[in-house]
Length: 116
Image 1 (cartoon, rainbow, N blue to C red):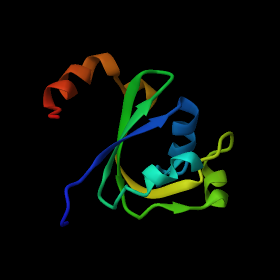
Image 2: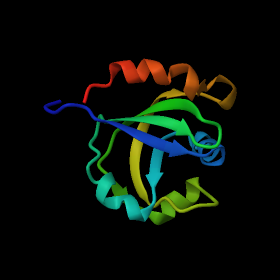
Image 3: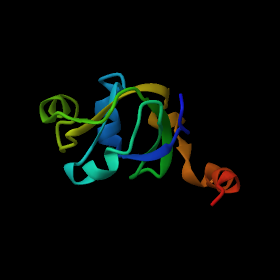
């Protein structure tokens, strides 16, 4: 690898997380309006997964492909929303809701490590 790995916040609802779990977390998706940002994601970059309605961290996914658009594939994963901008991933950590980490329990640990 000849570049520094980037970390990306990947927002999920409990519903979209469950839909991706049923597909073994092999892909993550984004709305079409985010395409210009998604294009910056490279293989080996890491996604820190966060459950929006529960305020919990739930996983780490590793990008294994360049970004691509595939609305048909996205519809196979997510039934109630559209995320056609896709990146194939390997799940490094994928926690269920019960074992996900509350934001308030780890936010201070992350803040101590962030350097601007």
